[in-house]
Image (cartoon, rainbow, N blue to C red; front, top):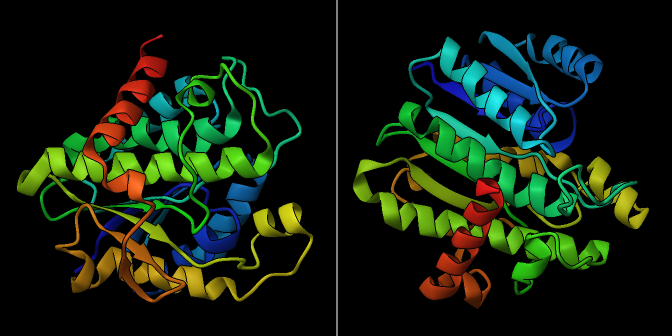
Length: 264
């Protein structure tokens, strides 16, 4: 059965490779990218598969463009089977957005939260939300999330990925059986993505490792009933995330902090 699948950050790395696999299986792919030229190139690459491919341009560091992305998808589709929040940032020339926020928290945590929330009417009980987490997870400084404290690249990235994992579990618990399955996934450490090369100056491992787990997360039965769980692809199994992600009070604090940013 053909599924409609939206992948953010699909112009290179894990997102692009996952899109190729899913399109080759005949699924209808909605590809997001920030750079129009790179996105058009990615679409041509993915169109080698059997499924239809659409493209959506948006800068996820700008909440207005996240809203526009959600509106564009909703205008074209009545339902969405899988949302893969893959886009991420580790290092940036300017780490502060036009709204005065840390771009790592915005792209890695807040934008996927907003996009998921806006697309919930399209996501039924059989749908899935796959959030790209990381093995790098560190306790979240809520003031940093709100843009009041500046962090190093490593700290901002690790905290933003834990914050993503925390709201993923909180959303899954709040939706229960009526909502889509919401799962956070560490696709694998030090894979050969642009992010890893820029951050650490190394080639990294096979990006296909990350693409394969996203393919499984989108389609396999093992993820259909895994809402609220965390999959660690380094271990090859569902595992315990950072302890803070299992703390309901801390997770709710993170959700409230994100909502406060969005309400400004």
